[in-house]
Image 1 (cartoon, one colour):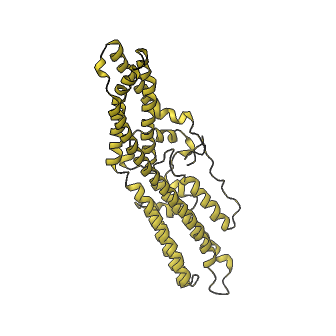
Image 2 (cartoon, rainbow, N blue to C red):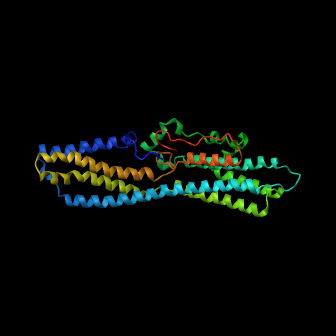
Image 3 (cartoon, rainbow, N blue to C red):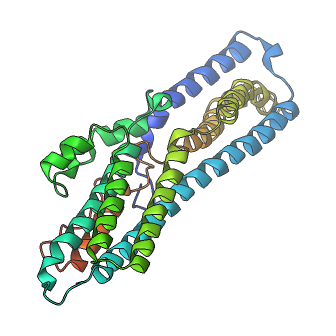
Amino acid sequence: MFTTKRVPFRIIFPFTWRAILLFLGYSFLVCTLYDLMNWKFLAIPFVPVATIGTAVAFYVGFKNNSSYDRLWEARRIWGSITNASRSWGIMVLDYISRSEKTLEESALQPVRKELIYRHLAYITALRVQLRQKPVWELHHNPAHEVIERIEAFRLCSLDLELMRFLPANEIENLIKHPNPATVLIRQQSAQLRELRERGWLSDYHHVDLERMLAEFYNQQGACERIKSFPFPRQYAFFSYVFTWLFIFVLPYGLLTEMARMSSWHVWLTVPFFTVIAWIFNTMEIVGDTSENPFENSINDVPMTAICRNIEIDLRDMLGETDLPKRMQAVNNILM
């Protein structure tokens, strides 16, 4: 996501330069045919054109609102994961206790650390899985290209991401599964059952921790619902069609309005058409680049930064001092 109030021109340019050249060339051709070739029949009344523009504006607005809802829901889900992760850390540290007086407190610390580190591996696996591109995202998209050009944002393989939290043999077995995140939650549950059988975890506390694991599954399922179900194509496609239909007929309506002032005013159609067409095209692009919040693009939910914040909080709860630094924006983009 962007961390600045204004989007820099170097980000806007890849999205717009081709369209602006097309708008300039198209409007110049229409004005040339009208004025120099005397094709006066090209001018049409502006009222039907304005009616189309109004309808398109409402339709594109609906699409953008729906895209924003998907983006904001994704951010809320990761906010819930953050809160649940902190609760998990507190419960693990306080619920796992000595069943025998002869058992040293220090013997419990490795168990607590293992449960917390496996949770950090879980949110890391979930983040990597969500940023894998499905079929409908495998297309030319400037939003992807901006991220791919920044070395700090290039995706690493899952096994490399997990090396900081899990032993190598566990990682080797984990990456064989189609959904490693769900396997990690299953492993957490199995270890909780083992701790209860040892007497290190009471029945009540065991139920409470299992309820937290179910909450993580709920939030993961919500993320996967957004990821696996794209914005409905019937809305996205026809928004694109209607926008370009309006752009196609717009210069002919502007000719009529400009010609009422004088013959040379006809050429003002070129800049006015370019600006209006750019606005409508940009509204369409904004909706397109916001509808999939987990596609590793400039409008992504900053899952890497969120995961790092969770890691800092939980490792601090463990009493560790060698904590990683919080993620910083690169080129005003936070991932």
